[in-house]
Structure formats: C-alpha cells, structure tokens
Amino acid sequence: MTEKKIKISAVSYLNTLPFINGINKSEVINAIELSLDMPSDCAKKLLTGEVDLGLVPVAVLPQMEEYHIVSDYCIGAEGEVDSVALFSEVPLAEIETIYLDYQSKTSITLVQVLAEKHWGINPVWKKATAGYENEISGTTAAVIIGDRTFNLSKSYPYKYDLSEEWFKFTGLPFVFACWVSNTKLPESFIANFNTALKSGVNNIDAVITQYDEKAISKAQLKTYLTEHISYTLDDKKSKAIEQFLEFVREKDLVK
Image 1: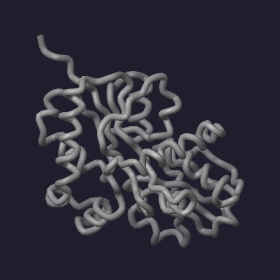
Image 2 (image 1 turned 180 degrees about the vertical axis):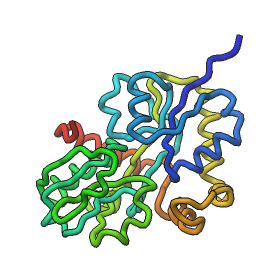
Image 3 (image 1 turned 30 degrees about the horizontal axis):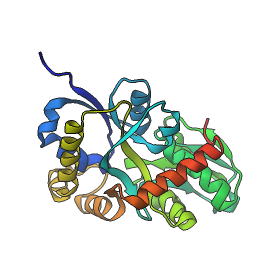
Image 4 (image 1 turned 45 degrees about the vertical axis):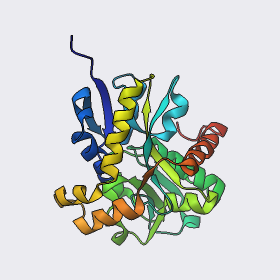
C-alpha cells in the first residue's frame, strides 16, 4: 500500500526559492504533493484542510483551531526586508487612504498595527483588488508585497519598509511567514523536511546560478536573499511572532 503523501502549499515569491530548491533536491520530494501559491492562498488551503502543511502568513495563526510550527526556518527579516512596503506620493502624516494588498494577511495586519501604535495615523482602509497599484495618487497610498515591489521605489517618492518600521517600533526582527501544519506530522518527516530546508538555505548560490532573470537581476536577487531575508526561526523571531500576535488579539485589526 502506497503511503499517503503530505500536501504542502508554499509561497511562490522569490524569497521562497532556497526552500523550494532544497525540497526539490531532497528525498522528501517523494513524500509530498507541493503547490506554489500566493500567501493568502497558502493560508486558505491550510485553514480549509486542503493541505497539511503550509508556508503561511503568521497572522492566520489565531484563526486555527490547531496548529504546529514546523521547522527551524521562516520568511523573516532583521530590519529592512525590501519587498513589503507602503508606497505613497506624500509623507505618512498626509496619507488619508491606504489600499491593503490582497495577497497577504500578515502584511496588511502589520501596517494597521504600525499606523495605530507607531505612526499615529488613522487612514481609511480599503481592500484591494488586482490592479490597485494604479490607485496610488495624492493622499492615497498602498501596501504592496512580494516580487511586484522590486524597482517600485523609482515610481513613488515615499516608501515605508514595514519590517524596518516594525524594528524601529519594537527593536525586534519580523516574521512574515512560517511553516505551519494543521495536524501533528510524523517526527521523521519533520526531521527530513527541516534538513531539506536547511540545505536550500545553506546553498543560496545554487539558487542564484539557476535563476532566470525576470523581475530582478541575479545580483539583485543575491542581495535580497542574503541581506534582506533572514531564514532562521530563532528565539528573537519567536518573540517577535508572540508580540505581533498579541497586537492582533488585542484588537481585531483586519476583517
């Protein structure tokens, strides 16, 4: 009898490439069914039980009846992350409306925490749909995440990196997504999966070599993956997750 494969949803952004490379080159690939999705879809699939394990935005954790953070790795940043930002034509104090990126719950929750507790602004929040980037004008700003953000700094005079702003506010790194299962997985699988992720993170040069230049150049990708993304889920990042989730529970910031 063939053993049932573990279904996994991972983020399709460039920052996940080391993870995917490690998984694809390990034996664990034979034990899983892997799909690549935007963060919000990763979360939806895990919440509905469509997958067993996902690289999901940490903001969804309070919605889960049962969850287990799997592995020693995450998508995090210690300061500027470069790919999650508020873009605007005017300074923070003049912003009246902010569009919220539909691709990740964590990022839109984070900007609301920062607005209330760090920046001291009270904008009108708008749920975004595809193409909302074109609505940035005057006092209307927008949170944009992922690969779409690369080179956007040239288009708008103001860019507020959300991870950098979180660090100014708390003195902590930030975790955008971590590997979470909705049920307890076999310890042997978790160990092999963690080893696969470690291999990918420790061989970022292999990812750069294989990269087919699209959104950014190989040089830009190397800088992004090695200087802006921090993959190890250490004690400081665990503390940052706890702090962030406290803010989420304190006030239901995102509907």
